[in-house]
Length: 255
Image 1 (cartoon, rainbow, N blue to C red):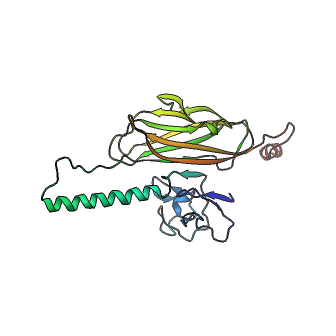
Image 2 (cartoon, rainbow, N blue to C red):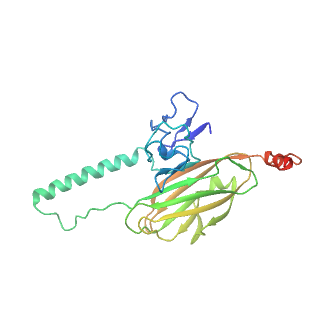
Image 3 (cartoon, rainbow, N blue to C red):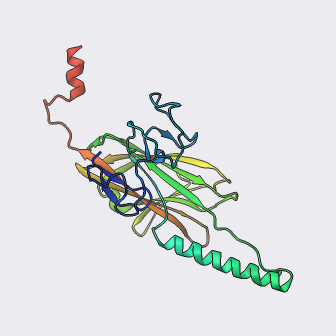
């Protein structure tokens, strides 16, 4: 995997570059445990038996490990820069309101601390690429990090991506499927607090090349709340010609 897309800012990095593993976009260390195929996100531990117990492992750790392998997945984040600005503004407004209420003695009746519902998305695809015309499976994992029910959950697939691949099956099936603008919309029931939901997408690439699967996560009933956009590159190879033997077929013949 000569090129790796940074899960934080989305910049493409060459693993052969002298500055690797530091991202060219945000300087994040791409060799941390949380970005490795051996790391289990749910248990927070390394699954490689060769390094088990040798050093401390966590999502942000960067131990001296020779087994690090960039995962063929993209953990979606918000658009770079803009969320940080809003967090800073919100913090300043809250601090000012708190100071005013302290001076006045008691908070106004209509002052209620609100937190925005938060959804996270990770997308995992085939690590070794796929063959044009054959099925491949992509798994999207949606996680409700908040402690409230979030309704109007929609996983949206860019129609531009579907021009190069058929979306053959979605499991579990959405409660509603429609097209809105440049998106194929897959609507799902509300998510409970801290719920994790896995959605399997079965695709059939139409042609060889790099298929960029673009997904968007949205929620809300009356007003749309966009939680971010993820783009997963999938390497699609040409199907073997008639009479050609793949490596596996040769191996089978030798047995």
